[in-house]
Image (cartoon, helix red, strand yellow):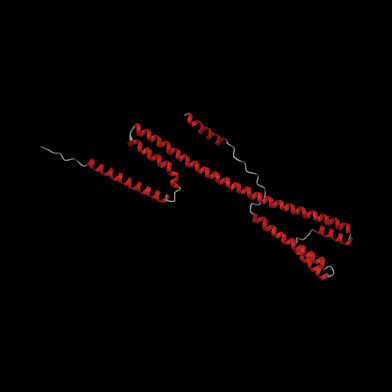
Amino acid sequence: MWRLLPVVLVALAGCSSKPAELPVQPVAPTKESVVTTLGKELDKTDHRVGAALVAIERNADKPKVVVAESRLAQSYLPPPPESDVQFALARATKGSEIDYAKQMAFGRQLATAVNKAWEKLEADQAEAKRVSDLKDKKIAELTDKIEQGKKDIWTMAGVALAVIGGVVTALVGPRTGIPLLLCGGAIGAFPFVVESPYWNYIAGGSLAVAAILGLYLLWDYVRDKANEDTPKDQGGV
């Protein structure tokens, strides 16, 4: 009995150990293609608008080019609110270099903030993908443990029945104990047999054997019954 104590302690330690907690998954898409595709489209828009503005600056002496490139740049952007349009028109009318410098500084700050926000989104997407993969792995591990637990239950049941069969064989006789031993082995092997690619053939063959055995027992019962009902010959001296 004392020899089993270390095994019991190890089992209890394994059951009481706290599983590792998964990190919090950021609120972001787990597919990299979502962020990558959107980022490429936004970059294309920004690059086309920026290129049109460069063309305007370099062709400032050509009104037709300025108007055409301006309209082209606007086609890549959503319509601005009327308040922003009036603000820009007032700035252009005033033509203050100080106002332009302030707006350029604000624009750079806004562009930097947007870039940082986009980099954070990409980082969150990568982290969300990593945590999602960890969750999938954890689910697969738990599923494997559940399946292994089921197999262990069948194995323990088979071992217990086999032990009982051995005891019965020793105390009562092999006629009663050996079937229990065979049943124990069958129970222990059941989950492995079910997962076998030959399970359909095994199940079908077992059913066929059971059907044949059932028919034989029925035929034997009917034959014995008929023999009992047949009158025996009365001999005389």
